[in-house]
Structures are given as C-alpha cells and as structure tokens.
Image 1 (tube, rainbow, N blue to C red):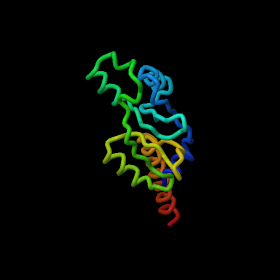
Image 2 (cartoon, helix red, strand yellow):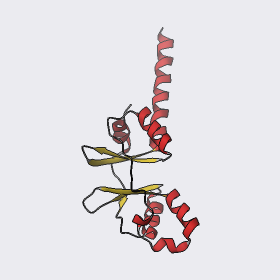
Image 3 (cartoon, rainbow, N blue to C red):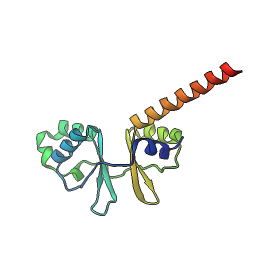
Image 4 (cartoon, helix red, strand yellow):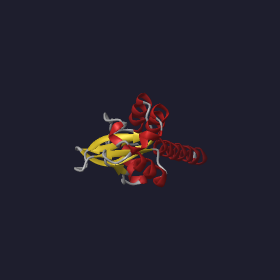
Length: 143
C-alpha cells in the first residue's frame, strides 16, 4: 500500500493558513475543521511550515494568552518533513514514528498534493488487515 492509496480514499484537500495570520485565527480554523494540525502556506502556495495543537498548547503554557495575537510564523514548525505519493505505508509509519508527529504533507514534483494523518494510516492498515483476513478465510473454506 502507498500514500497515494490513502489520498485516493480520503481526498486531497488540505486546510491551510498564511504565516501572517494570528494564532487565534489558526485555533479557530483548527476547531472549525476538527483537525489537529494545519499547513502553513505562502501566498505562492509553498510550504512555509506546520502548526499543530501541541505546538499551540506548549507555547500557551510558556507564554500565556498573549500568544494568541502573535502570527502563526512565531511558533510554527518551519522545517517540515514531507512524503511522496509513491512512498509505502510502512515507510510513512516509520517516518512519523521517528519524527514523533501525526500529520505529514504529501508532495509530488515540488507540488503539494495532500495531507495524511496517523488516523488515515491506521484506518488504511485496518482495512488492509481485514481484507487479508477475509482472503485467508475464503482460501481455507475453498481448500
């Protein structure tokens, strides 16, 4: 299984925000969309960073409520690791586990083409395991 198969199942839309928007606006968007991370894109559509709920909570604990008026760029992760549509699910799980993050943008030939969360990966792996179990059951019953 590949990252492309996850995107084909879940879709390729990505929720994003500008690095100049306030953290308050980012929090509103995360809550409205019921998501745990948001991609930060430049006006040209390039990846500037990633902002997660964890980033916000850590900084709120450190700085307090005044953080909410700061720009997203103040606390976003600027060095964003990406994956490609052709990457295997096993590779993706390894990268996400090693990096200790739950969301990863998908980039092909320099262009953003989706976002994958650990929930998407788990859902796909469960479907794959169920399909394998059904195949084995059918094989045993016909054999």
